[in-house]
Image 1 (tube, rainbow, N blue to C red):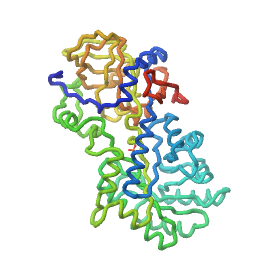
Image 2 (cartoon, helix red, strand yellow; image 1 turned 120 degrees about the vertical axis):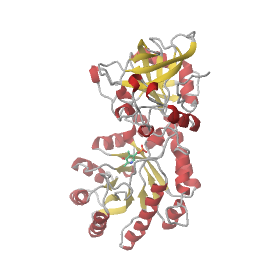
Image 3 (cartoon, rainbow, N blue to C red; image 1 turned 135 degrees about the vertical axis):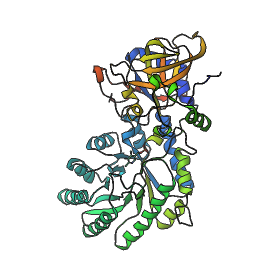
Image 4 (cartoon, rainbow, N blue to C red; image 1 turned 135 degrees about the horizontal axis):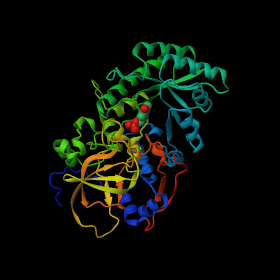
Length: 454
Ligand SMILES: *Cc1c(COP(=O)(O)O)cnc(C)c1O
């Protein structure tokens, strides 16, 4: 069916989500909770984890995966990481406790984030977590903590300020790095310098390969000085594809203010790249196959020949297809040539809306009545709040049925950062609960609540 002039951005097919939709479970849950909710598909997380590990194995690269916990607050993903022997990337004492409490071993944690507070450092050192040191002062604090406590040496990585992102507020400059290495040598009884780390914004592979190769060389130099320096964390940033290439490029080429409520303007660069030529485990494979700038071998060979273990901290890529968000349409208004829907939640459950951007994959309308007439029915989606700017979707989505109160609206593939980064009980609305659906291969999917509601 043609959608006329309306751009579309369909998500890639996902059998597990389809199975949940066709089971009728979502309507029951909407009734039970009386408001929006998220459902989580942890088997997708496990599958993504397996695929990344297989990629490392296939490239003969010694590697270890840490799930970047900030991408979703649910317990089930941490539980899956623990069950499969993966690590977790934490950045606060609360996240560290959560990870430990859900079964992740202390030595399988990496602690990132700037200016870690003393409580966090004490916990990290006591549990043998790897600490990505972000500043010289922090290195001193780690040394002091280790000397004062019962467990040593503390395990550290030195986080590097990426030369390609000199305005990043994270990481040590080159001068600081030289000083830090000296301090690591001096303080060998208190800490073990295991290598370096970085995290780049953006999703390009080449700069990651370049910096990884440079830091591999630095590992070799550090070893000469007597340091362990045998691992390298390249952070997160493995891209996720939400839609196919053709839809994405057509969307970018055609989208214009007339397609949005209130003629809102989004530049192409305002959007997350909802399609990437390679994503997830395949992006990791491509990265390992990349030749770093000026090198005559791939990154994989560079690492293995230097005996360097590759550490990764994916958040979004591990959560690809691992959940979705469901609202109920509460009201429908007619506007000039389109409709304005109001759903029973807020854009706080769709974090992209809070970054001068829009979560662009098409939401899916699940009509309350199966006889809903078909056609093309453009509509934007507003929240049940008194904020003029609180829209879940500014774009006029070309729905295939006329939306009506009581219909469900499913935002697909929201587990990575969309669900709960920004949620708050605004208007005293309760936070949307999270439902774990861990068997989608039966006619009635099995579900339970995730451990908490935050
Ligand atoms: C946010 C973050 C990650 C995860 O990034 P993704 O893009 O979700 O893969 C990993 N490491 C660090 C240090 C981060 O800040």
